[in-house]
Length: 289
Image 1 (tube, rainbow, N blue to C red):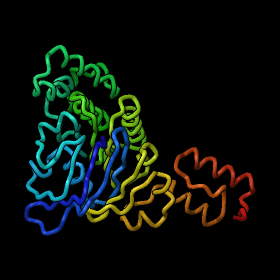
Image 2: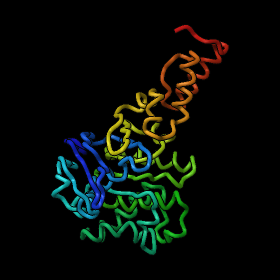
Image 3: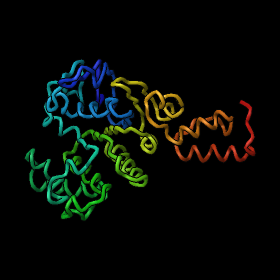
Image 4: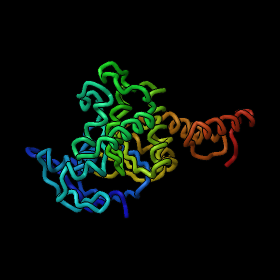
């Protein structure tokens, strides 16, 4: 069963005449790690909020078309019922951290669905360990760094044992090292637990190297859908989408134009190193294609 099924899905917010999502048809398989890429107002946040039912049930809006998560019809489900399947982490983690300690924060969700106390204690320790915050039980969320807050928000979502994690621009306040650590953590969740991971970002610099698939949104529509390698190889796509091209994409484009390296698209740092070394080995001369 696909994790996400959408057919001709449109969303219009109350008071607006324009569609935040416009005729989206898309399937995401369970266990995929997907990067949802687009500029502000491209529809990324609406897409994320739709997956856990905030749209249309909590945020006044009209949903048309068919949308389902793990076979559950979103239009008929409720946020509470979807929360056990879909863990949500927002752009600013402090906006969803409100308890006095990390332990209380992680226990809050399971307590509200009447999970037995012994199981809650086990889930707290498990979640802290998974996100690298072991021993932080009594720490106040306000005392944590931005990266630690983000990991705590992820731990709180994980305590519900969701089948899917949805993160809306989770790395906006993190430095490059923090972003690498965050995406590595999300990749481990996919690989260890078969979890479906949806990451919405306005830039693809680090995230694209960790994901299985990239969907590019523009004005609420799907502009492109493909593998990271395919997306990176399209040098005009990022301009159309209104987002900055990753350095790997720019390097690949420059080397292709100058006929340097092997001509393969550059997807990872290892690809870039290989291509540069190949160019150096030929003395920087253009290679006939």
